[in-house]
Image 1 (tube, helix red, strand yellow):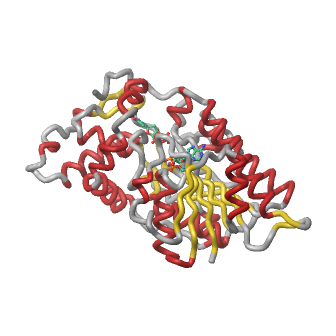
Image 2 (cartoon, rainbow, N blue to C red; image 1 turned 135 degrees about the vertical axis):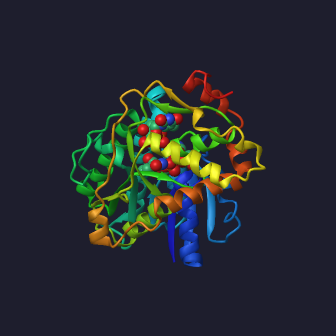
Image 3 (cartoon, rainbow, N blue to C red; image 1 turned 30 degrees about the vertical axis):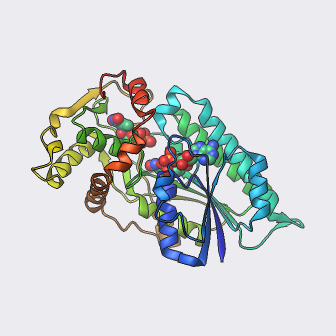
Length: 361
Ligand code: NAD
Ligand code: TYD
């Protein structure tokens, strides 16, 4: 019986990961979800599992040393899976300090708490592992060709990616200094259910359903490498079980797409999926696409070389983009209450700050 301490489990990837793990392992594992419930955290993402005996939620900040020490003292934690972060590049450009606090200081506090709890008599207890969920964005921006490999030098270019790269270096330092059992995963852009509608795909779906403009940055020619969130969850599980301590594993499925192509696909699929009787279909049109001012320092292209995790750990992506994007759009159509809940409150204010109020009312 292994106990997983999952940070940020109420967010997009963390909640999908918890669903994936509880479905796969059932009562063989215990999951403690530790999350501060920021604007991006939503316990509604976990309502299907919240009554399970082997699932516990603790509201807490990863910077809260005392609370973390207490939780580690009270529970026999085997694995730390660290998802919690400030995760949105645009927010990091407007307000970088919280990114440094949560992503860098939070990682330092969590790492050290795990180390102190797991280190005894000059070595680490058996069967422990700390997994740092990082991002391909730490490698910077690619030109038209090439891929990020694990030995690509770090070249973070946004305050978000700089904070994630700093956290990665702390994790590496704990391996080099203490031989702490760690892995770092660096995944490409994820899509799927429960993603907060500030990121490209859910933002465009939400706006399109409301007949609102679709704000494409610059010329829409930037490229991202998209992976269905369950494939990421499965990769994190495989790395936890089989990853060689101290190693970095890139995760991606060779699915590069230009932003403008993604937006066009979303409009096409939405119009196929919405019945003619649905009034939201009437305002759905490519005319909603609005080219807006480019993101500052906008990374041109991300693309992962996933050979290491495929060859050494036997992971491969299972969900094709054509299938995953339809599943995702259907999920947003079937969960309009979820969308309504997460876009109430501060969302409209945030949106106005971001886009000057010209896009969504
Ligand atoms: P998210 O923004 O949807 O969720 C983040 C979660 O962390 C939320 O539940 C939030 O409440 C929680 N959190 C924030 N600050 C906290 C704090 N101080 N203490 C405790 N909890 C806190 O993010 P996501 O998209 O699910 O990303 C999860 C992780 O995966 C992040 O570390 C991110 O860098 C990484 N990642 C994301 C992507 C992607 O495409 N979204 C790709 C690769 C890697
Ligand atoms: P995003 O989902 O924020 O992820 P990231 O910046 O971490 O890759 O953005 C994905 C791409 O979509 C990125 O090139 C920026 C672009 N984008 C838009 O064109 N319009 C938008 O409204 C958003 C949120 C993103």
